Image 1 (spheres, rainbow, N blue to C red):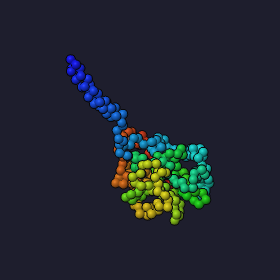
Image 2: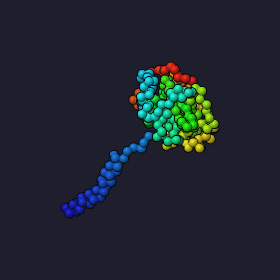
Image 3: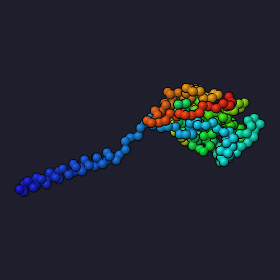
Image 4: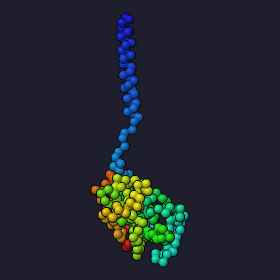
Length: 252
């Protein structure tokens, strides 16, 4: 009888550590999250600020919407233009406050500032000594009013300027980022201006909007340089129910 009790006790001692190890392994497996998917592999619906509005804009409303964030200035060349607040540092450039997101119209700019839905989807940008960047109103919506360029390692863009604008030899408009960081927040990834010039000079043009977005046309860097993310399951088509582009935008 004693031998049987001793054998039973011995079997419990030898089994207990195994049970503890098995339980511990199960706990770790249940609480450790799976590895994240590859970056940019999936994309949900684009944010509203990157999509066309359901109704045409009222140009008169631009004044009220932008006045808290800058000032309106009358110019002899372009009429009334908007200048971002002086709190913006001197190194600021248009199309750097946000990220690029993929839509059925190509790459669209999703702004991170409250005034971006207007000035990055309508009108044009110019730059002048003593004044800095200024925005000329327009009425045609676009994913982004920019000229696209690219190399095998970088993607670059610059805002279109208004009709008659003269691009100086030291144009401040080009922004370049490494291709693998294209969909990251732009402000933290952009190449310093001192080094961007060499990239731009070696770059090639990519499809860009000229007068107005055309249905079925893709704008932005080619798929080989900026792979298009796979829409997330259940995502709503980006332009579903969107109004067509509005007439009246000037050719650059």
